[in-house]
Length: 115
Length: 112
Image 1 (spheres, chains in turn purple, blue):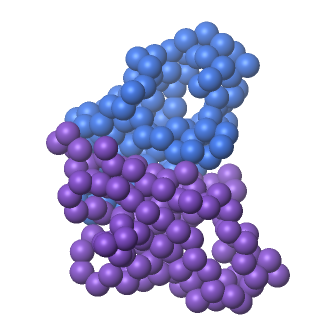
Image 2 (cartoon, chains in turn blue, green):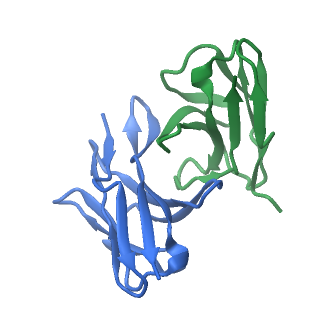
């Protein structure tokens, strides 16, 4: 069975500093990997995805993520954090299971950016 | 132009009642989903339809019944509501091939 782990419930970073939100996954076969952001009382918003190709993927709002096959990781990064980046971030994997593509989400990481 | 819309946004009801949540997408996607987000923000897929055909049916009580009248709509009917059904329910849509999903604003269901 596929799974996604986000080892940190919360990440704290000062505004202007780089940020990393960690994600590791376990699937059989080639994964599709995603990051989503959820602001309070809102639905999830798609940030970026990795399917194939360049291991560094760029997405919305200046975010990027690096796919590392050997470490089965897909960490989300941003060079300079903004207070407005404070939100809940979800990593997700989509892989073939029993003939269907089942999306599986991590438990989410709360990012808090301090002024 | 709302891409994925859900109605109602809030739903407060008593145990034992039956309720429905509606979802519509105008993105031209072929796949739609229902998710449940609990109080700890954990997101769990419930159902998915591709071109009106059920393709994902996770371990959900059979009190929950999805229905997709066409590719743009996916409704969720819940019978005999229980306290544990209280959660935020999200609808989402995607193209089956590309995978990224677009979520609605959610329906906060409170069962008293």
